[in-house]
Image 1 (cartoon, rainbow, N blue to C red):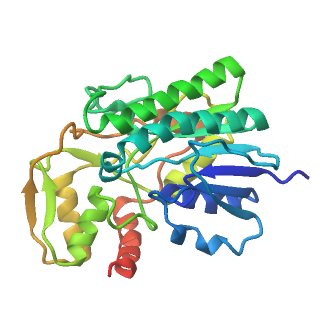
Image 2 (cartoon, rainbow, N blue to C red):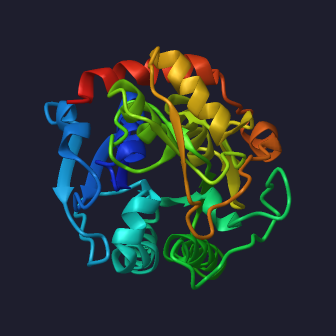
Length: 313
């Protein structure tokens, strides 16, 4: 029987490394590509002893040559937190445009299924609530966040163009806020920032009045949805995330309670174009993939707390 092979770009990142784990557990060979700009070797070093895993340090905005057969190409390479893509704006635009072009070219050459990691950020600061896949978004193309939002919107357009013009088998996942072990402690997003501050006894920094909302999905739930999408036949974008919504202020209070911290909450100015609401409509994922999150936020936060405790210096 033919043993399948998957190429995962950004495979040393938070989501990419969990995806490598899952694909290997499904009996699929994994070739992980990462230039380690924001990915970390520590996320995948446990896989180096696995004969079915191969790591290649590579910038996917350059030509990609894989001599072996490839059945799946999963494009997860990109800076993904505001702190990263505001610091690396050109690289973010390049990996969303040139990187998507190169990885689609690889999938076309190998006649492989292509899966694009897109994002809830394609909806920008949304004018509808919750957000479903038919919503076109409200994005500021020239704002500081536009480098990420528009890179992902372009990559979706390019993916659909390859599907329509080259008849390539493609999938698009729109990923909402996800958390869990292997997150970078300093990636600037609410959850790692709050956990780090709480465990160090520092004040938790909330931006604006804290009334903006987010929806947090535990990483194993998300990866399960991505795998189900990969082996489905769904071409149109699919939202994956946890629809349970919480304000950032309430979330900060929850982290203080879970960590048993004596930290207080301080307020800073809201960053430019920061979305006020973020909640996925996952009706399509439920209907097509028979998927919905299983792990409650409290359960997921306790699992993530152990990881932060072990890794905070």
